[in-house]
Image (cartoon, rainbow, N blue to C red; front, side, top):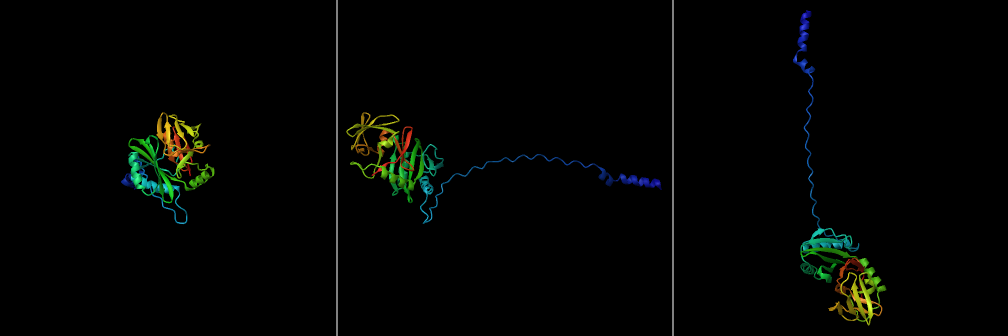
Length: 289
């Protein structure tokens, strides 16, 4: 009896169920490392110019930013320009828009003059060596300007910026209070600059009898002008100024566009104009009688 019981216990211990319960559990296999998914940078969408929505009636006209944005859309479509960052060395407002286009200044001047027919307030003014040109146009209820700067023979930077209306009004009031009385020979509606405003840009010296000698601080030939006469002398040759300079006995009123005879450039600015003679530049508020 005891022998039969012992055989029964041995059979149970050697059964598959017992062996399965006592067998060691194999370790779980280590998963293979997963290769990292590379991150592909997404190219940013190209910048687009979106016309600003005009201000609602009764809340005032569009601000300078809105005017510039709307005008830049028109200019960009005309010149087929690409939006770029404005160079930091240019003295424009924070709302200025700069465009790059592959075209020449003469072609761009013709295209934009046609685009703004009936809205041009001041036609193209060309700088020294014809490397810059500026145009003032009506933009809604405000004024703005377009500046062309030649980068190469076939490349041009186009700058669009608004002219601050409040600043323009304050400038006009300041000029009215400070400008001299209108001397004989002045052409009404034209821009003049005082010889004192040219300090640091052009050296002006009176030699008597209404004759003045003018020399750019950047060097170059001396311009000799006579009050009341368009004819002038540049170095040893003769030139004709767009308007005759006028002296009231104390001040010399020189035509703004005449500064180009000294290789100085004149470009519109937020207030007045920016005159550059060589590396020297300054903001000037022209006098208009």
